[in-house]
Amino acid sequence: MDSPNPSLFPKNSGHRNKPADERADFPLADADRCVKCALCLPHCPTYRLTRNENESPRGRIALMQGLAQEALPLDERAASHLEQCLGCRNCEPVCPAEVPYGRLIDAGRRMVRAAGHRSRRERWATAVMTRPWATRLTGGLLRLYQWSGMQWLARHSLLRLSPGLARLDGLLPDRIGRHRRRAAVRGEGKAVQLFLGCLAEEIDPGVSDAAIRLLERSGHQVVIPPNQACCSAPAQHGGDDQTARRLSDRNVAAFDGDTPVLATASGCTASLMEYDEIVSEASHRRFAGQVVDICDWLQRLDWGSAQLSLNPIEERALLHLPCSQRNVVGATGSIADLLARIPGLELLTLDSRGQCCGAAGTYLLGQAAFSEQLGQALADKVVAERPRYLLTSNIGCKLQLRRQLRRRLPECEVLHPIELLARQLQ
Ligand code: SF4
Ligand code: SF4
Image (tube, rainbow, N blue to C red):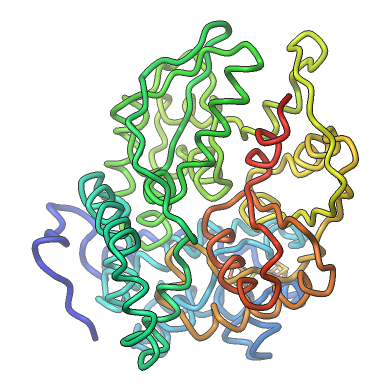
């Protein structure tokens, strides 16, 4: 079992830090709604990959029930079945008993974390993403690595000997964007607030640039609260509820309570929309209700009066709808309708039912073997369509699929839908 670095992983200060506490807090009533019908199994990517009941929603729910009732030991084997869940929630919309699987797996991960079974890589990734100074430092080091020529040297030496490091290197964007010092208020008109995200804003700031450009051009004043932090998803889904609470409190305090909060990455948007799952207080419920998907917001604008028009493009684009978009955020029709506004664009939607690209937050670091197989299977479908653009609304999916396609389909550019839209602005 990996032991964490004490400076980055301070001891919990009080409640809910012992395995017994976490078992007692597990929402057994939600788990007991599962009637074990198996309708979710064909929709679960890890079950489809392994054909192992323990890697299915039904198997994991039964396992968590056994752990919470102390009928089963929480050993490494039990922990691995919960850790190998993507948290994609493909099992939720197909469940006739409406089992809230997302809530269950978050509680299951709290048991795993309290028992000390989380992987070192996922703990490190969560620690970096949930601390603004660590995120900025990591972004700076990655830019230095890429811009100084160290990446080129590494690719011609060390990375040839280490497939694991080469895989991590391959997840980086081709050119990491320059760090942006963003003004707190931009443009004039109807005010909206923009959520930037943590590591995404450091390594892929072009998405926020595109959002600001589109919003300014459509007559909005864009407010970017400076004290905002990570959405808390890595902590919430990694079983660290104290950090999730701290981050959600910080974001609720940073954003004005009367103005819509627009978010670009579907993984972050999903987490922000469920802040009332982290803290059930009126402030967090209100914040959750303020959050709007950027594509949904843009699509609902009156484009005629906003005087927005787009240049045509005669290319094929394939739209990938991330699991967080399909299963939590929704607004999938808005993304397709928004892209359909680009004259000449041939838009296809990637059929990813029962699949996940394998990025799943920190999963692509902690569960490399499963992540790799899932990413390859989805990339096979993309390659078959040979699109000029692959459009996906989540940063993790973007990094994972770009790495998968770099050699197999080098002419395909992987973008967030709003990046293509902003490029085509007249
Ligand atoms: S579909 Fe729902 S009720 Fe049926 S096994 Fe899956 S989680 Fe349980
Ligand atoms: S969240 Fe995804 S990987 Fe986990 S059990 Fe449900 S469908 Fe399977």
